[in-house]
Amino acid sequence: DAEITQSPRHKITETGRQVTLACHQTWNHNNMFWYRQDLGHGLRLIHYSYGVQDTNKGEVSDGYSVSRSNTEDLPLTLESAASSQTSVYFCASSAARQGHSKQFFGPGTRLTVL
Amino acid sequence: LAKTTQPISMDSYEGQEVNITCSHNNIATNDYITWYQQFPSQGPRFIIQGYKTKVTNEVASLFIPADRKSSTLSLPRVSLSDTAVYYCLVGDGNTDKLIFGTGTRLQVFP
Image 1: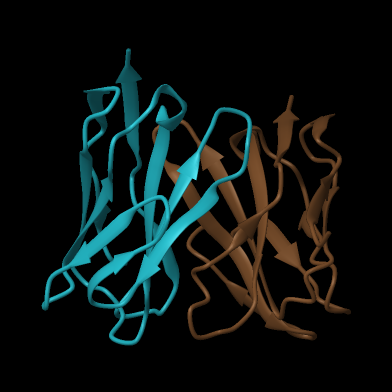
Image 2: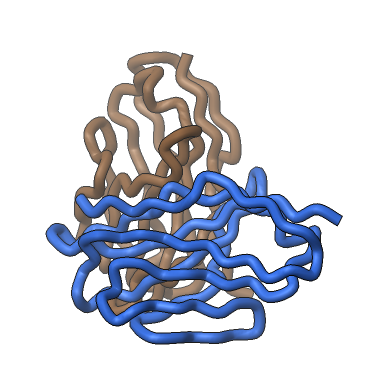
């Protein structure tokens, strides 16, 4: 069965370190998204991609970057982790740009920045 | 960015119908309105999607008025397993970026 996976599921790091969160989907979807979820803020869009070599900034993109070198993967990089980036991160994918809001979500990565 | 608001919480009893409304004051013209369910420690799960009027599937109905500035998710005959947080998702009318609603925590009692 097709799926979307994230790794690691839990990560503890220190302020200033670079961290990369992996997202891999086997749906063959063109669209991929990264969100963060915090208490009191719900889900907020960080970056998204509508295809290989395409990346776009979301609502809260500062301090994060993504790259899309193939259809299956959209890794999220925190260039210099900050305590404010402690959060749960969700990756998602969808099939078509029209109706791109019908997304399939991964299980999430809980990141703690000390 | 569009402001997408929902009631913070709702309580219900098993077997009742529950209606959750999402207000989106500046929705993208060509975008769908989508609703998700989320259980603790899991990613959101797609429930239903619509563009206008009414959509029904095996688990829910979605009502969208003509101006599309709001939408109502209707869950018929809820059970204990429907206890979760429900989110709407819309595209912002100015930026086309996807914006999640604030989320509604539904608690179903026996």
